Length: 94
Ligand code: SF4
Image: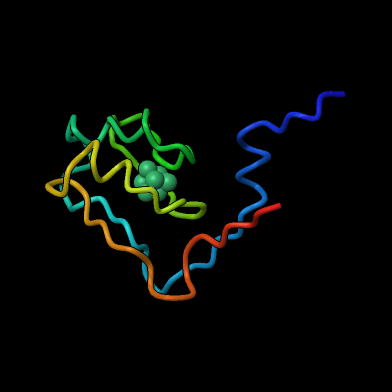
């Protein structure tokens, strides 16, 4: 058996504490914007997906707060903030 862990297994070691509101939101009316579709490809946690209507959806649970989606898509389509202190990703090392 391989001792290498897959990405999903590694991500499963982190804990995510929900904030009162999602710290990243798709701006209203931007769900079909082509810039937003970049996030489906670049999010390392795989939190963006495209539904049957061609709208991009975001599931915030498991966000690594890396900022990749903000850079790739831009603040015109995403409202991006860090979570409040004590919320968000809790990395586990070792
Ligand atoms: S900050 Fe990183 S992990 Fe979080 S949704 Fe954006 S790309 Fe994905």
